[in-house]
Length: 352
Figure 1 (cartoon, helix red, strand yellow):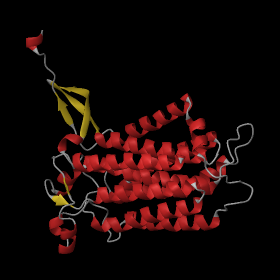
Figure 2 (cartoon, rainbow, N blue to C red; figure 1 turned 120 degrees about the horizontal axis):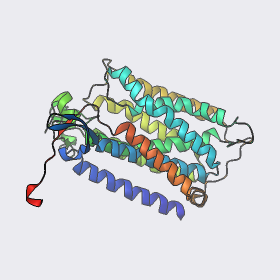
Figure 3 (cartoon, one colour; figure 1 turned 60 degrees about the horizontal axis):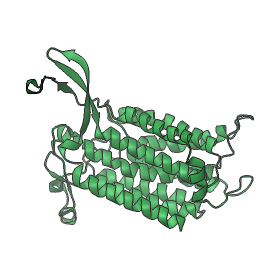
Figure 4 (cartoon, rainbow, N blue to C red; figure 1 turned 30 degrees about the vertical axis):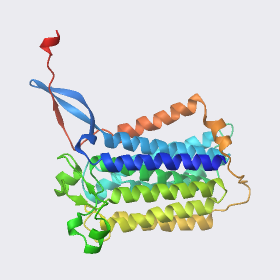
C-alpha cells in the first residue's frame, strides 16, 4: 500500500509539472528570474542574470538526490555512506557537464547532462570501492554497488526528465522545425508541438526559429524518462535491482541516441555526435556491470521498505544536506553567462 501511494503521488506531481511546463515555459517571461546589480556603468548598472533554467535545474537535481536517498536508505544502506557517495558523484558530474560540453561543442556557457551521466556511470563503481575500504572508526559502509547503481539510474531518469523543463525555459535542446520534417512527422505532430518566443532563447539566437513550430523533443524526453523512472521505482521497491538498473539506463540511453536525430541545436560536426557515442558507451558499461556485479554473497539485500527511509531521513542534518545540494546546483547552473542586462534605478517622486 505504501508503494502504491508513493508511486501514485510522484506520478501526479510529475504529470502536473510537465503539463505546466509544456504550456508555459516556452514563453519569453520564463527565462530571466532575477537580475543582480554588479558594476556601475554611467547612470546605470551592469547586471548578472539569474535564470529559471538554474532554478528548474536545481529543483531537478535536488529531486533526484532526494529520491536516491529514499531508495538507498529504504534498502537499508547506511546513511553516511549514501551521503558520501551522492556528494562524490555530484562533485564529479557537475563540473563534467561543462567540461565535456566545451570539448564537444567548442563553446563556453553550455552544459551536457549526457556527458555527465557517462562520467557518473564510470566513476560510481570506483567510489563504492573506495568508500567500502574506509578504515574503522570512520567506516561508513558496506555499500552494495548494484543497489546503489540501480538507485542512481532511477534518480537520473527522474532528474533528467524534470531537467528538461529547464531546457524549455532556456530554449535549448530544441527539436527541428515541423516545416523541415517529413510529411508523416508533420502530420503526427500537427497538434503537439512547441513554439518558443523571445530573443534571449537559445533557439532564437542560435538558429533563428523564434515563433516557429518545432518538434517537442524536450517534452517527449521528459515524459519518457519520468515514466521509466516510475517503472524503475516499482521494480526497485520490490527487490528487482538488476532489472531496475538495466531498464532505466536502456530506455534513457537508447532514446538519447534516437532523439539526437530529431534535434536542431548544434551537437558537434559529426554525423553521429559524441553524445550519441557516449550514450551507447554508457549502455554498454551498464550491461557489463549488470552482468558482473553480484546480487548475493557477503552483502545481504533485504527487500526495501519505505518506512526505513522516512525514519532515517527525517532529521535536520539531512534537510541541510539537501538544501546544500540545491544551493550548489543553482550556483552552478543559475548564473547566465550568455545573456547580459542593464539596470536603471529611479525615485518615485510622487511617493516621497
